[in-house]
Length: 352
Image (cartoon, rainbow, N blue to C red):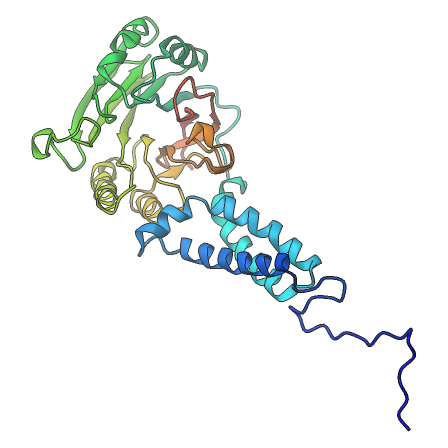
């Protein structure tokens, strides 16, 4: 005779990893969470392929954001009983976050007792920015020795004239289409050169007012209290298309050729690189030149876009040679630009 189980006895459920607990059924919400989780895993894995895939490097710009969202979703999945999916998402998210969070790891900094420090600024002021009083106030309040202005145009000439009393030594190379540069210095400029990374002005088509037309850089040797400091100011192409991506890669290759003869000297390469610091091409550039990212030890320091908040990324950089020690780095208010200015404090490193 077969006996039925008592009415108040519930058969035990068996947990098979991603099988929901009795309290959380495979509802539309949980199905959506699983789909989103595996889509996130796929996107993060793709973002590691920037060396081989143009779109992957653009996607890698959001590794911080994807990693944080992935961690949050993995917690939700755990509470939903979907532990295997949660574990996969958690591991990929943590691995992805290692790139953008690397600058928070402690590194040796300059001797705090060193009082002779050079204060540098790299600031993309935005070619259409006409808040000149705010830009001047930002520059003056930062107590700088040397400033590089990116996207400097003829419309900003008067602003630089007004700064001559504080920065009597200036190099100006204006452009109307976003690739103009200017260096302002309190210290004498021993020599300087304005040259081009890949394209001379006469080598490109003048087809659109906003299209790139050439890519100048400024190479300046500055006398800082009896020490020669070389400053390279750059603005690399924005890799929003595959052709621009290839041109930016060529610019990195040219920059290696320019910087390497001076790698043992106090050298600063700064500007708008239009490149995240964990890009394989940026890392290749650092490895080939021996330059250090001044962000190391100070944090993420997003610089663009100003209104992006949670999606802002670090594309403006101050890189220094081993002959220089970094003491301080910060990001200042935007002063009407779509970029935050970066300020860095360095000194000549003591011989080991």
